[in-house]
Image (cartoon, rainbow, N blue to C red; front, side, top):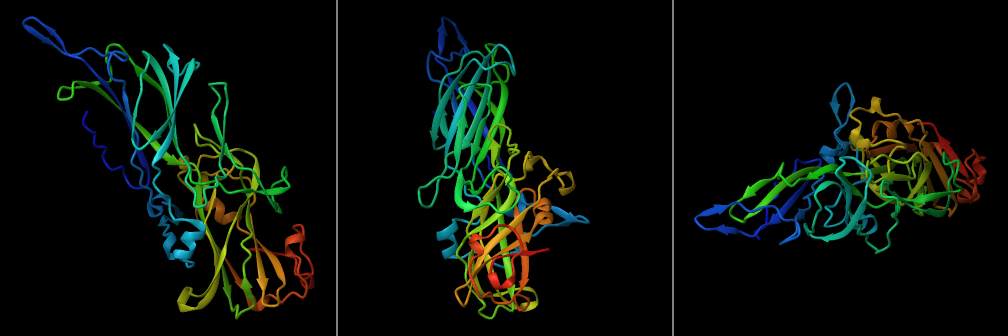
Length: 398
């Protein structure tokens, strides 16, 4: 069987082409030739061909924030991305998945009906071959996870009840959750990049409706367009340290973003409704060029979340359409030159709501306004304003 060429999808969204290819045997009759019948079990099983994915943040973050002005995240991302960042965090943008989990649910003669049985598959590469009963099918696919250190934070709850969705989630870390996570004491691990696609009510009919015949390969072919979309969202947080002059010398790497969803529905892409704080790592870079050529130090990193609670960010077209009701605080632990550490807390609610499917989050801190603490303890305080001598938790209205 020849390989089928899948056209490159439009930038900004992967397109899943599922090709149901059923091999036929020729039926020879005296004096005539008949096109082959569709036999799902007699010869080769259908082939499912999985997508090519290319997602560029330039086009995925197609926000129009104010008065129709296009959002160019590179113009406000001063932290950059070097080899050390790639070693710690991985690539800055989405990476193309190569392996997939596939679920096929059979609903018999009822389109969108109750699911009767499920068939599971793990797909390495882009071609999957299997058989189908006549009737209607739901198909769900999501990517396998690759990590730098081989440790995966994502977990999947796949119920034995076939009509229940697959839920992706992460567990709690050992770090205290400071803000807007009322049900949980600790923050949660950030998820890895996750893509999914789901199509329901696909008919495999005996009259070949929707199929076309490929005479060269003697197969009946049906193409299904499925949208493979990210359901975890990249944020690029950065803290601009003006006039630092060596005051902040180290970032232990402990940071959190609060008010984000704890989980997501893999079938629908709708994030869960439980708000949690997502734990992520940051790194300090010295002597970076900022606006108008000013040289600053920058604390930055890359984080992934399930997005805003109760929302599929891929279905939101404008920030005004987002129904985010949570507040979002970013807290970052930093260490001063005298060895004392403090936790800085920034209200970034407006930025997260505007960047509902990811983007740059920027806060600016003038270190000339920040006295040097005399005692450490930022990691041990709750989210209240402490006296400056404590070196505790500082809140900043942005």
